[in-house]
Amino acid sequence: MRRMKTTYYLLLAFVFGICACGILSTGAPSAADELTPLVVVPMNANTGVFMGTDGRLHMVYELVLTNASGTPATLQKIEVVDASNLAKSLASFEGAELLARLRTNGNSAPGNATIEFNGTRLFLIDVAIEATARVPDRVMHHMELMGGGAPGPKPGTPVALKYNVAPLRVIQNIIRIGPPLAGKGWVAVNGCCAVNGAHRATGLPVNGRIYFAQRFAIDWMQLDQDGRMVHGDVADVHNYTNYGADILAVADAKVVSTLDGLEDQKPGTLPDPATINLENVDGNHVVLDIGEGLYAFYAHMEKGSVLVKPGEKVTRGQVLGKLGNTGNTSAPHLHFQVMGTPSPLGSNGVPYVMDLVTVEGQITEAQFAAAPTGVEGVWNQGMLPKPSERHGPFPMELVIVGFGEK
Image (tube, rainbow, N blue to C red; front, top):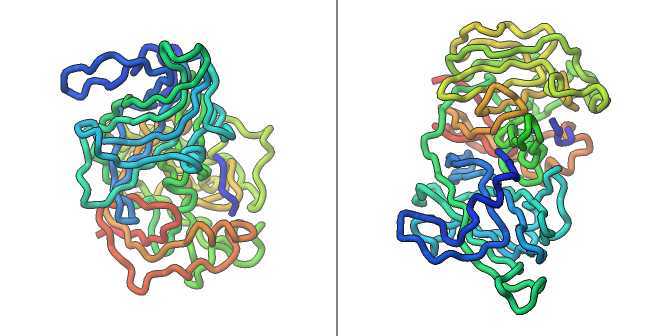
């Protein structure tokens, strides 16, 4: 399956009034004011830290970068640092790695690290640190660039600039949920946190803001006992191992919305873009209110399989419907995400961890990219000799897991 392209806040009117100072307050006396021609604003007020199935701690979020100077600003380095100890670096991006994480407001790669006057870029961040590392309560961002100086040797001549800006609170209390599916051999396709992934880099302008609703979304596909996602004709939905699998409530919840009348899409092709809108892009689906101001979203369900209606209460593990291939999809899978509002697209993706998963193996990025159709082939080469039970992890990209209650 080719990577399926199915989606915090950006308000440029405020950009010049927020974070336009040098070292922002970290509880210590304010430093002298400093000109910061490249304005840096986190898209959200906080970021959650979570343990991945890779055994590392992760923080995933975005920055909005706006050049408020008439001189072009060329990024050289962006570093995530501990706000209480600015000398402690948690992640550093420069060169090709920095450029790979820059995006325009339309999700395209800008081609270079220079931001024109009044220009805006998005910067995608994934901080991955050792499980035993101390996680700070707040982070800041150390910027190094060539940009407009004050007064500078000559108007319009770039000068070297370094400053620390954009404080961001780190939340460690992440919601824990149950499994959205049951059984063995489930692969986390299009998962966290590759910047070129179909979900990670998809910000959409909805309701007047840019949202990364799919920041932590996963497309779940299942392997059979021989390690295959599909056997026989790949254009037949019934030949996919996961087609018709039961989809489960991840928590005691209330049903917010459903859609159940769309036909399956023929695998191997995407629907005509002219037929896609905000209502049907994710096919037949269910949205659950799982409490704590969070919502679980299940997409691409089989027509006529949805068993719940808006307003109903469901219990954890209850069957909601069946896995299908409806909406903007090229192969049967369950698209699952947790978000901060009931809107599947007009919301912020929120991290979560699962009570229990059994890590069974790992598919490499190279293996997946080399598959002719993205689904055909045998995918069990990376299976572990002995599956490993994990309590409280987030499933990372292309991990193979088993779901079961304990």
